[in-house]
Image (cartoon, rainbow, N blue to C red):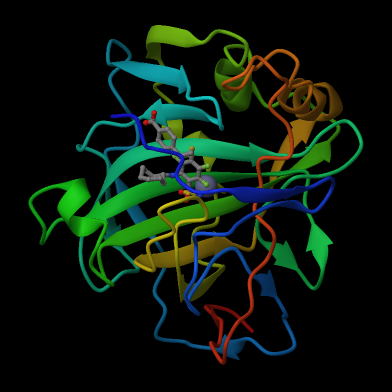
Length: 255
Ligand SMILES: NS(=O)(=O)c1c(F)c(F)c(SCCc2ccc(C(=O)O)cc2)c(F)c1NC1CCCCCCC1
Ligand SMILES: [Zn+2]
């Protein structure tokens, strides 16, 4: 599947890109203003199943010219925390450059070093492509990546392949370790894909707990000279600018 990266987009250094052909008022990413979030005790812990893969299960890691994406088997599913069941499609990363951070969502105006997105589709639809156009069609789990004192071995498995355009068959048995250990604390809001076609069909979960990677690892993801985009330029700052809330509220599973 190669998505037509349709439409023109404005590129603003350090502010990321925005897309001229992505209208609508339920867009992502957003700035999460924690003073305006609504505590919702009915938000249950996110439950994942199938995220610990057999060691011989090979996954395809691709650099699609916009991000590095890992195709995921549909055996991975969100089985708690959402009203319906969602199955995994792919995961990918957003990062900055050596001159600045590159998460897509911000919290109280703070942009984190990077952000992982695990994209799922609602199993009430037969295929991801069908689900993608329905308001309850997609669920994306997002987590922030920050610089910490130690190398994160689970992210190393992905980052070391950034520069390879096609990595056929990579064993990544510890997928669950790419996400925070605490799946109870998260923000939840209705939004969109952050790239064309920007469909407004994503129920977003952004975890409160961040992932810690070493400085080298964060630089590795942002030494994007390793990972080239369509016209062989370093792939950097692949994050979209934050979008207006247009009256939306962000729910929080914690106070
Ligand atoms: N944050 S996000 O989830 O909106 C998102 C981005 F911001 C993204 F930037 C991307 S990558 C750019 C779009 C794209 C390009 C090529 C391919 C391919 O060759 O398979 C796929 C997608 C990207 F892949 C995704 N996730 C995609 C959304 C694009 C359309 C459906 C594919 C699965 C989810
Ligand atoms: Zn994304």
